[in-house]
Amino acid sequence: MIAKSYIKRNLERIERLYNKSSNIQDGLFYSKLAILELCGWIEISMDDIILRLAKKHLKQSKNISFVEKEVIKRTYGFDYSHHFRKMLINIIGITGVEKIEKKLIQSNFSS
Image (cartoon, rainbow, N blue to C red; front, side, top):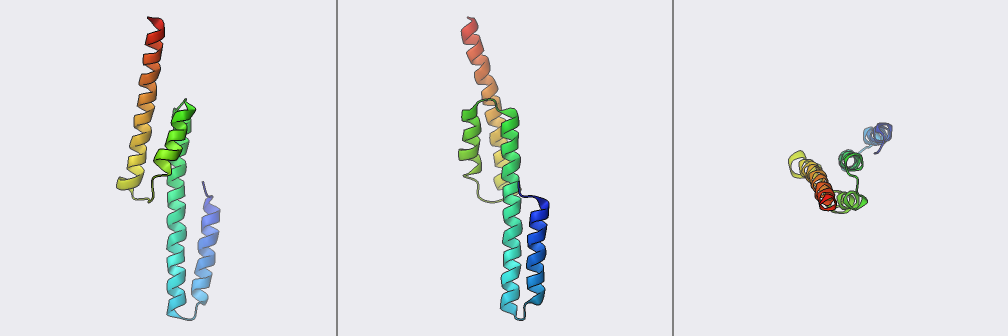
């Protein structure tokens, strides 16, 4: 996860540049840059939350790898409903599948 101090420092620097800008075009450029910086931080933070959940609740490395490659890497954006919620659903679902598979394997060996 990107530290809060890092994003804060970057946004403060962009703000200083914005305040020093002498024309509208430069001001607009710095405004857009600040939005991109913040949005990137939000998206990386959401990805980090999902990866931490995966590593905490999943036992099989193939499932953690699936989350990294198929859930996180294929999600571009930070809207709650369209992006973050879908990643949470994937984590909850794969955690359940892993538990079911474990029970099936155990029941096959015990019979």
